[in-house]
Length: 313
Image (cartoon, rainbow, N blue to C red; front, side, top):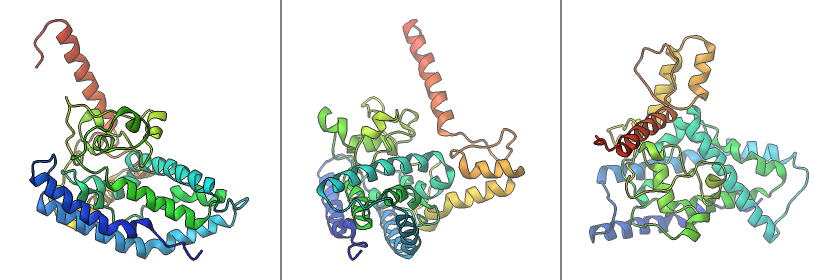
């Protein structure tokens, strides 16, 4: 247990800032990408706040992890194959968490922070939530403790997973070849995940291995014909870190307060972001499923007109 709190993210943080500076220099010399000072400053502040709140909330997560760990059926230990298995298993449960974070509003209220930038560069990787403990995201890692992986091993693998994900937040790196991109998450795959284009919504949830998206039908390829546009469906229009951190929690609380009946109140917690009751009168909303369905219908009609020789508007 002496190594329980050792985290690769802490060791990698100085290199994060170095790489951000190198990317800025690369972009100034004509490389692909963009930095906006206010946006970058907000991402940095969100990252600092995430560090503080993660440390403050660690006691809750650790207490939950150790309580579950006492029920493990056996000890897996620190064999080399256990490290490999733990890393792969942790990445799978990250995929499960990440998918839930986009499909369940309670988790999205926290995760939306990471998607709130309209720019996509290495500083975006640091734009993290301040409400990770409140959103209970740590519950998705509990099966690893329950099955018997060593706590220090799990924490290390989780940190290594996050370190890997830093470098994929860039427009400076293009496609990396079919072999690598067939297995690993890459900047191209993750640009899709951060995009608001209807084609790309709710896709590519992977942390390290893109194979999970390929296995569970959530993979979408980046295309040159449809360059990613970044942000969220309704962009905030502010760099205020407090607004960035809490806007969705405030909106969700307002919806729950106005909802009629327990069922609708619960669905505002559990349904996808954008869901509203059929009789909702407080502004029209759309889920990503609705947005994608409309896009597919429009694309299909445009294709049919093109085949018929009609002009495509």
